[in-house]
Image (tube, rainbow, N blue to C red; front, side):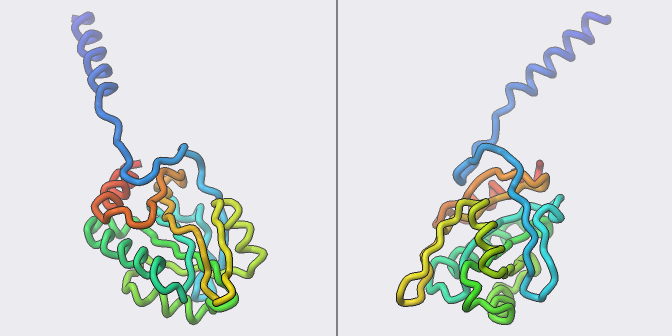
Length: 187
């Protein structure tokens, strides 16, 4: 009887090991702790990344005057959250302004509120503090002579344990983002 139980246990362990590994739809990252930061939000309170444990964080760097990529990305993220239903309550979309000169707290709050989701959080910092966060996430930013800001356009997915898992490249389908978010929520 003891042998049978050991054999059954071995079969169950082997079967569990043979389960397919989830294939990320976005660009997979080497799992590591997301660089922590604390920045002021658009309401003047502070936001600390590590305090978001238990939620998936979708971290995006952009600016409110962006004519195309930023509003499209945030709109896609809103529609993606709509796809995942009640699970969206455990997701934070964090928009970090890369244009602190023009993106006042009021402008940032108005911009984020356009997406009509309590999951959306706007952050704004002075340039020196912002530069530290940009370096930590390897975000390239360049202000053009006409005032447009060229910036990296990926969305970073951070799982509920604070681990960087995947980057969503600009234009990734909502279905793919939803699948990755739902998988990350299992962490």
